Length: 345
Image (tube, rainbow, N blue to C red):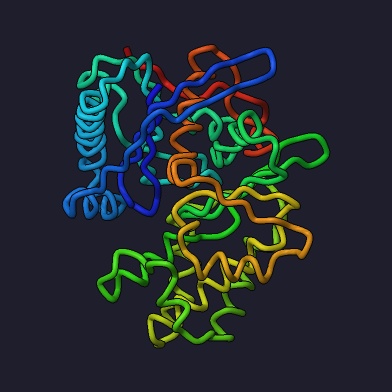
């Protein structure tokens, strides 16, 4: 199974060739080979700007992006001489507003199948949203089946999300915007991202900005079924940050502190941390200082840091093929568990 992931941070297309087995003792996995294909400037701009473009460009880009994913997969298979049973693709999120009952990930499954000839599973979120759920995060079922030795799993991607057991159930939620907002401000000084968090480290905290961000009502809902999207950030975060005509370093310093403050209370005795934000040394240092003293932040080897989400979408694809539920209602808040994903081919 090849798991395919395109995150909100627009770092590139993650491809992970995974071998997953269901044994009597539970699921096992290996990431045999994995690769990130950075987006060209054309694709980066097109995906970033698509939510604000004329309507006809949405289905057009859906088809073209699916074709592009298929071409990338074909090259990946050829380079590594792979035998692939299925492709499970998250696609790229363009709209996500479950409170109004819609979510949209592009990357046509039909186009991927047409390019590769390999059965392709896409659209993992829509059924859950239709059932009244958040449609996110979906990764916690993989946390439960593949990483249960940890008390919590934290992903530092475009948004930071966390999952853990509570009262016998797996719960999870988006905690706070993460790389999405950090990258936005780094790019204002022509940096793709704040490497190692060094710009933030050199900045000075802006107390009024920090207080305004921490006061947003989303953060006071507690450990509940809740998720974030680009729309929420544009409506709530940027109108606050835009009020402060300060150095980019100071804004990044304050945003990093905000992120660490929101995550820290949810850290558990052993917390596995993955995602691109794991390489932000300054963010991890702030999190270490702010988390409860009885907790340990565990960072795995780089393959898992980079490709855990692609791995878990491969697992979601396996569950879809087996007609097994692959969404936890305790996570998303939906009416009941569901089997997400449409199969092409």
